[in-house]
Structures are given as C-alpha cells and as structure tokens.
Image (cartoon, rainbow, N blue to C red; front, top):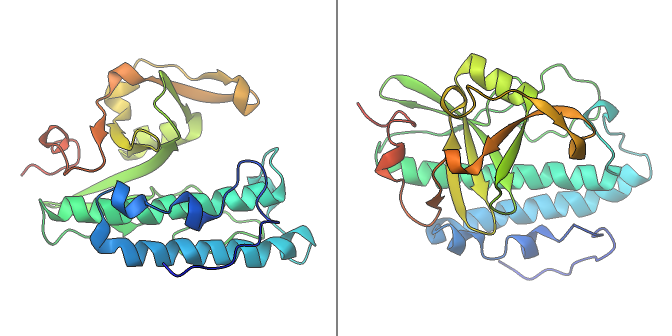
Length: 236
C-alpha cells in the first residue's frame, strides 16, 4: 500500500485511520494473494471518511437521525464505514474458503447497504437482508456478520436481528478480532431456550445472550473445519 499523509484531526478516542487499523489484516487472515484488493478497499473507506466528515460536521451532509444512537455523527459515520470494511474483508475470506470446497461458489454481499450508499434520508429498506448469501448444492445459505473485539463469556445479540434470523434461517457468523478466530451461531440450535432481556449497555434495548461455551471457535488462518460443513450447507 502506498504511504499517504494522514490528517490526525478526524481521529478521536476509539478511532484510528483504517490503513493503520487494518495494516496487517491480509496476513492475519491468510489472504496474502488478495492483499492489494483488500488494501484498496480500506484506503477508499479512509478517503471517504476524511473527505466527507467535515461536510457532515458542517451540516452540508445531513445523516438520517433515526439510525443513530448516543454516538456523535462523526463516530456514527466512522462505525458505519468500519462495518463496511469488515463486511468486504470477510466476504473475500468466505469466498476463498468456500471455493476450496465448492469451486464455483459465489458469495453475494446481500445486505440492504450492499451498494455502499450512506443513508442521508429516511429509508424503509434497512435490515431486510442478511449480509452474505450463497448457493450450495441448490440450497441458499444466509449469513449475518457480527464482530467482537475479544472473546467473551457472553455475546449480546439484538432481539430484532435474532428474531429475523429465526424466521429466515439466517446463520450468525461471528469474528473475534484479537483472537483472530470465528464461530457460527445457529439460532434454532444455540438460542432456542434463550429469552431476550434488557441490555443496560444498550440503553435497555432487548437482547439475546449467547453463552460462549455453546459454540466452537476456529482459527481464521486455516481452512474451514469439517465440523461446520453441515452448518454451511457444504455436504451434498
């Protein structure tokens, strides 16, 4: 990746330039052959953030307020772009790992924000689709990406997302940043006896609590474990 001069002004507490934050992500995920593609995407989001943040803060770009919480507009904007970063990177990871089992598989970025257009007015298309989908032996598999900084004893999951996953057969694909591992959560298996409860850190919003000991963690550097083939529709 070419070296660029970073304007430190937009980066406050909890925010780092994406080129710094993801500096070794291709190596970390064993995706060196995709390093150029990944780095170009990361740099594009960083440029978008640095270019558009002043316009947001000055009021020239107005964000859709209904999607925000207590975060500042700058932090909210950063977090949305950060989420898109992770989705793009994990799509490449999924495509790479799945193609070793089904060579002609295609992982589709199928979420409502797949076009990477930032919502600046009220929209009724949000939260309609899973983040990823692909066809495996005639069966459509849908995955929803969740990211955690570290391994936890309990993972909190929004009630609305889990309820939708129950209805639509969506599988949760969790990535743990510091441990560089992942796991899959099947709501009908891992949350069937769980009742949503108020989450204080989310302002009392209802959430399902997934116990870490209910799922199996796997290293993100390796190929997909045969343990997850059936979950992901990879068995004929």
